[in-house]
Every structure is written in structure tokens, then in C-alpha cells.
Length: 242
Image (tube, rainbow, N blue to C red; front, side):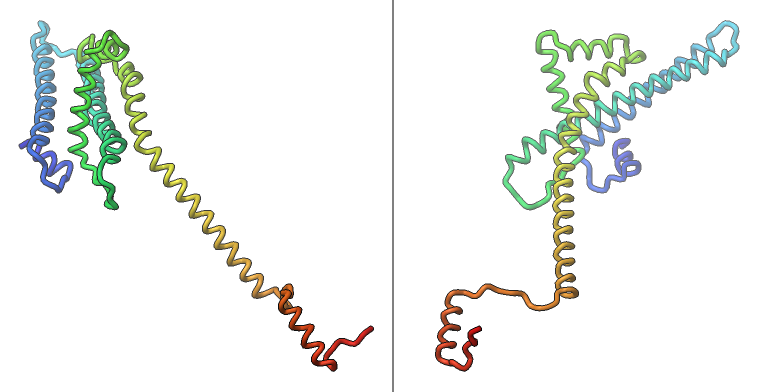
């Protein structure tokens, strides 16, 4: 129900959504809210159990700031690893592997965000398993270092430099670069065609406005023979000798 409410009210998704997607989204949202509520309750209890019964507002502000930073880190990693990178990976696989093997058609391919995202999550899980099945490597060590200090001290910098920028940036470039290249070629060709049309129009205007007299044409051999015969048959029309 929570997932359906999010899709209908917040995301304004008009098409019917499979219950698997609504259940997954609702589950993650409820888990996040529950974890946040549990953290707030524990903090309030810790403040209430102090011996002096007086709240240290400076300490409360510091704790709230730390909580906001922790929440921002978790939200950042959750959005990038849970939504953005899975969708981009699935989109790259669909554009470069799946679509080229399909039957050629003139229809524009339809990209379903939910379907691609779900497939991307599957691809991410497969890649995660493969990384830890292989011998000790850079990616397995990076994953362990990111989460070694728990959720409160996630190594966001390492996650960004090792995974998010290389993988997300490469996938985004693979999706955008061909489209930008095609757009540039079309734009340049249109400019060249426009320039040629303008040049032709200017030449036409010059010919119509400023051309005076007639243009000379070379006489073909057959025409020359015909002119000589006419001159012999009509002596009066023959040219006078100098």
C-alpha cells in the first residue's frame, strides 16, 4: 500500500505498476522510516536517562548534525547504488547488446524505467557475487573498506572514486555520446545544406538583376557544316572579302 501510494501520489505514475515494484519501494521506505524512528527514540531515551536531568543543547545540536550527515551519506549511496547505477547499466546493456539482436523495425524503442531498473539490480547482484568469487581484488577490498566502520562512518569518498564516477560516468557517456554525435552530424549537415541554398539563391539574384547581354556558346561541327552550305547556295548572303 505504501508503494502504491508513492507511485500514484508522489511519482504520478499513470500506467499500472506491478506489485513487485510497489512492494519493493514500500519496503525500503518503511525500513528507512523505522530505522530513523528507532534512532530518534534511542537518542531521546539517552538524553532522558542522564543523571542531572538537564538536556545539553549543544550536545543535542551536535548529535542532530551528525545524524543529518549520516542520513545524507546513506541517502547518497542508496540513490546512486540503488537507482542510478542499476538503471544506467541496464540501459547500456539494452542499447548495445539486446536491441541490436532484435528484429529491425522503424518503431522508436520504448524504455521502461521500472523494468530496466529491476534488471539493473539483478546485474548489480550478479556483479557483486562475481567480485567476491574472484581472488582478492581492488573492488572487493574497496567494498570492505567502505562498510568496515559501520553505517555511521561510511567511506563515501572511496565509493565515489572507485565505483560511482568510473562506472556511472562510463555508462552515462556510453548512453549520451552516440546521441550527441548524431545530433552534431545532423546539425552540421543542415548548416551545410542551408549555406548551399543561400549561395544558390544569391547566384540566381545576381543573374537576374545584373546579367546584361547574351552568353556565347561554342558552335558544334554539324552546325558549322550547315552554315557553310547555306553560304555557298546563297552567294548574296556570303560575307564580303576584306
